[in-house]
View 1: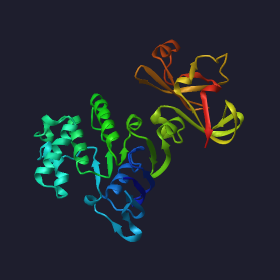
View 2: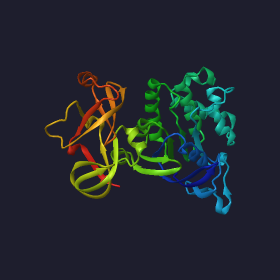
View 3: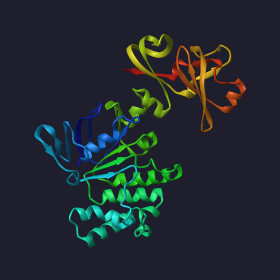
View 4: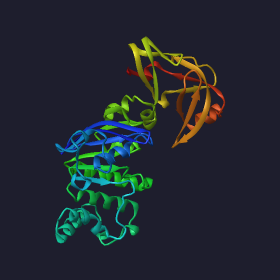
Length: 349
């Protein structure tokens, strides 16, 4: 119950070229900015758009291979899809929505309705069985959409931004329920999301897609610990630098930093915003890296404030509201930034 996909297609001036392998029982999250090709990739795997090159195999069965003119239509791919907007049939009840897939595959009406009732019960929606979509809450509609996808006994489950339409409170609850159902799903799951919390909570691996290309892939812990693109760094809230090293010296855009250890050649380096200290005067003491920058923006993030600096080294610092008040920070001011060498993680490009 795995998927192996090499998808190549062109939509207007946009080129998508992605290789993806998801083993049975695992969840792979596809992250990327808007327009990266995430939903197009899912549509190709679902059979809603045909590949121009490459090959897609689900559970060992080839479903799309232009070289052999193989193309299996969506309804015969044993793929369950949950769309961002759920796309429930508005004229059908929750029970009838879930029963629709099995009925379309030839299951008797009575058996399909019995299966649908079991799935709704598993989702905690017994009391909404006779309710139509317009009377369901966002969380309830999401659960019905998931039940409808799972009721067809799919080999592969595709989730396209399944939590995006929910408010923050409901998202937490539904994310928890979704994690439980995915843990019990024997097939492969591909989750498209823009929210790193969804990936962290639901996925085993992550694939980062940018401009139709994979820029990073691997276990969640590895990708978040060692990002290789600005997009991933922004998602996890860290500073990503790219430069060259010689010994314990890191050169980035003309700036020079001292790092721990001996390194040679092109590298990435990360600095947590909380590790960047701000000062009105040139600091003295332990930090070996300090430079004068200018405040570009000041943004509130929960109970912390993020200060973006320009200058020899563009970087984001995260400080407390008290520190902002004490230092009297305003946009356009010059301030000193300082980072300890031990706070910079360096890894090969």
